[in-house]
Image (cartoon, rainbow, N blue to C red; front, side):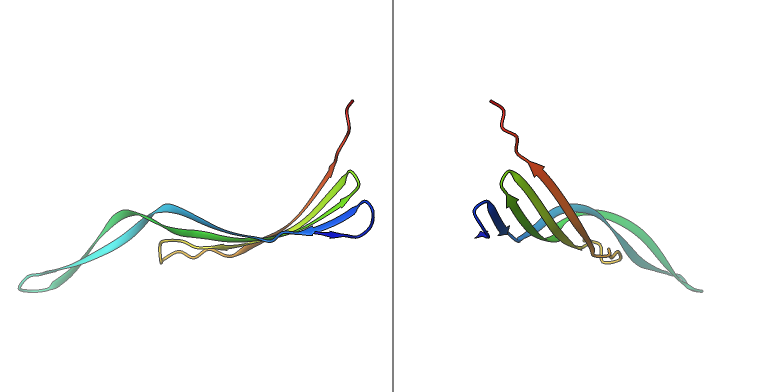
Length: 106
């Protein structure tokens, strides 16, 4: 925390989060059927629940307190991951702004 005057405080508190979960993954199984005249490839699908790392999130907030007024500017970056090798997700990022004011009630 950095104090920039009598009533002004600035704080930067980065966060790194890991999210684990389960996902149903589709697997394709191949088998070969052969007879005297030809060979045939037969595919079948099986589904299995897999557990693992699904998302990593980096959050960089900048909090500024001016007396009773609080301002927070944040940047969030998500590294998305699928447990199914056939699917890929784009990474996402978001900017956020939050304002708050503290009122005294007597």
